[in-house]
Length: 450
Image 1 (tube, helix red, strand yellow):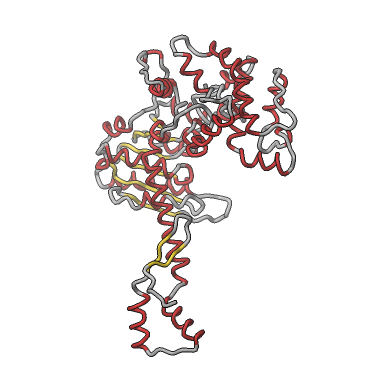
Image 2: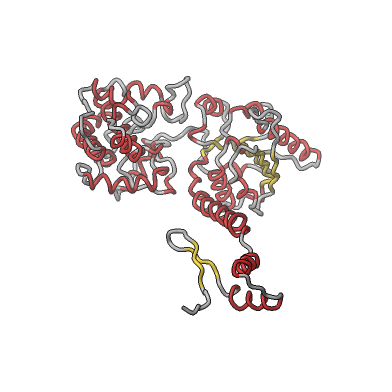
C-alpha cells in the first residue's frame, strides 16, 4: 500500500541503504516497481499528492510564468512525468488547468487500480482497498475541491502526507505502521470489522505496544530524553499515557538534556509538576557541534551510580531518542534493562535491526502524538500571542503618556488631581476587544458630543 499510494522512495531504504521506516522493505519496492500497472498507479498517486500539496504555487507558475507541469521540477519531480510517459501515459498537455489535471489523475487511475489487486491478499476485501484511490465525484473539479479541503486541513494526519481518499483521525497514528494497524482501521472506516488477526504481521517481536509491560517488570526507572532527537509533542503524548497508567511512581527521574537549537516547546514538559524532572541546557563550544548526547550519557551514568551508592539501585531505563549513538550506552550497561522510544521517520533500519537482534524492547511514540498535540498547539500559540501582546504592543502603550501628549497637542494643562480624576472617570472604564479579522477595537468609550 505504501508503494501504491506514492510514499517517497527514501522510506524504502533506496538511499544509502537506510530505511526510514523498518516496515517498508526495499525488496518490495523493487519487485513492485518492475510491474507496469503498479508503477503507473504509484506515479499517478505521487503526482496527485504533489499537485494538491503545492496547488497555489503551481497555479502561480502556470498563470504568471506560463509554465506547464513539465517545467517546474522543484514542485513536480520530472521522474514522475517521464515514468508515466514511458508507460504509455503522456500526461502533460498544452493549455490545461491544474484543476483539470487533477481530474485526469482520477480518470487515469480508473482502469489501472484494478490491475493491482494481485498484490493484495485474497483475504482482504478489495473494495476497501480500491476506495482509497478514488474520491467521491473525483471525475469533477468540484469533487476534487471538496476532497482537497479535507487534505489541506488535516494533511499531517494522512499517511506520510500522501493524498488518498481518507477520513483522518488524530487517534489513528501512522496507519501504515503494519498490517495489524492498517487493516482494522480500514475495515472500521467501512463500517466493518476485521476478525482474522492470525494473518497479520506486526512491527517486530520485541516491539512493545504498551509501555506498561515494561514498567510492570521494573522497580525503579530512569528516563533519559534527547531533546535533539525526539519530538516534544510525541514525548508529551507518551508522558500523558504513562500518567494514565499510574506508573509515574516508578520513575526515579526524568533527565531532559536540551540544546539552544531545539524547539522551545520542551518548556511545556518542564512544567509538568508530576514528573521528577531534571532539565539541563547544554552549551556549544563550536556552533556546528552539539553536546547533547555526551551530556545525556554522563548524567545517565551519574544517576545510575548514585542510586547504587544509596542502596536503591535503578534497574530499568528508557532512552527517548531515535539516535543510534546511544547504542554503546545500552550495550555497556548490562545490569540495567532498557527500552528505547523511537519515532518512525527518524529511526534508521540498522538501529532497528540492532535493537531487534539484541532483544532490546522498543516502541514507537508516534502512536501517542495526538495525546499532546492539540493541547501543546493551543498552549504554545496562546502563550506566544499573550507574550507578543503584553511584551510588544501593550508594553509600548502608557495611557498617562497618551494623555500628556494629548494635552501638549491641545496646549492644555491638568494638575495631578484633575488628571487622576479624568483617568478614573473616562479612561479606566474603556477596554480593548478584538474583531474577527484580528484588529483591536476600543469598547466602553465615553459618549462624546457631536
